[in-house]
Image (cartoon, rainbow, N blue to C red; front, top):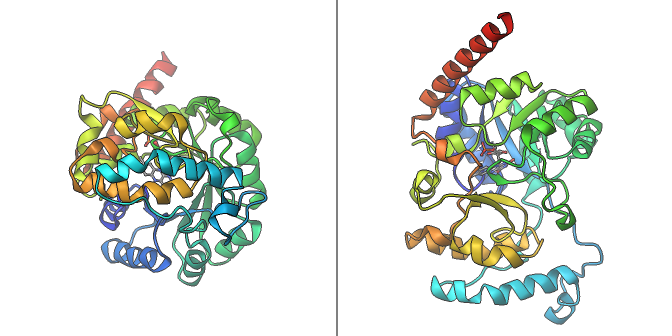
Amino acid sequence: MAGGASSPALVAAVSEAGGLGFLAAGYKTADGMYQEIKQVRGLTGRPFGVNLFLPQPEYPGAVTGSTGAVRAAHPVTAAVDVYRHQLAGEAAWYQTSLGDPDSGRDDNYDAKLAILVEDPVPLVTFTFGCPTREVIAALRNVGTRTAVTVTTVDEALAAQWSGADAVCVQGIEAGGHQGTHRDNPEADGSGIGLLALIAQVREAVQLPVIAAGGIMRGAQIAAVLAAGAELAQLGTAFLVTPESGAPALHKQAMTDPLFTRTELTRAFSGRPARGLVNRFLREHGPYAPAAYPEVHHMTSPVRKAAAKAGDPQAMALWAGQGHRLARELPAGQLVEVLAAELAAATAALGQQGAA
Ligand SMILES: Cc1cc2nc3c(=O)[nH]c(=O)nc-3n(C[C@H](O)[C@H](O)[C@H](O)COP(=O)(O)O)c2cc1C
């Protein structure tokens, strides 16, 4: 969970309790990622994973490093410039400036990979694209297992071709960004629910499936395992734990009756991500352009200023569809509760099967 939620303390607590904690490398410098890896190692000797964002390809025909006038000639950069004007009032209201949309598209991917090959961790997962076969092979050579987040069968096929060890099948219910390999506005509204997607991926590829999206209870873990997944992945459920580094306002919003719905939106980052519907999402979501990470960079100061001002209405309140079921338990205890619920649900299913 990029953005601070997956703190080293949360990763370690989950792994210590028998889960598999994941450190988010997204939005961090390579050294920032490495420092956190060392902190996790200091807290637990148990396996954990690191999650990387794929660099975003240049837009076809984009002119880089040129004047503003030439930049505006490209449809995507022109759309970003329009959105910048539409957000001017937000920056003024929160007494800040919009960020530079051209602050970087690669998320320091190569430098992070170099560290992970030099000083391996047990697992590396990828989102927003599929790594090359060379990258997967380099990690395998140093004993690291890999998984790629997929939201369609085609993406799962690409992950299998790349040589990944598993696919993380992310349903449309999931909190935060959809890990879609290429953002395609024409596909808006065609996102696939988790159970439907697990079944399709199982029949298309031979890789083990990690299921993610809307899972908040052990009985749901039993359901995705019954559907063919090997593992379940939970984000929102752990976001509210004391170990999570998510801002207190974000944690409180999960079960605040003020926030009744989640929606997929490009308002904050330019890529579809599921968050609680607040004022910013409602106002800007309808016209936010498909321009990641430009929109992410541009809105970053506004989101930070809103958080500092104690105003959740312009923060990116990422949340899965199950957010209302969030339980504010210590992370280790949450793993234990989920395991007990899973055991109970599995036993109940067994009894029904025998009857
Ligand atoms: C706050 C937040 C941050 C997230 N950040 C990442 C990330 O950095 N990388 C990633 O692959 N997925 C990220 N996700 C998505 C999760 O990996 C996962 O797909 C999702 O949390 C599952 O749905 P759930 O939140 O309903 O459990 C994030 C989710 C949330 C809620």
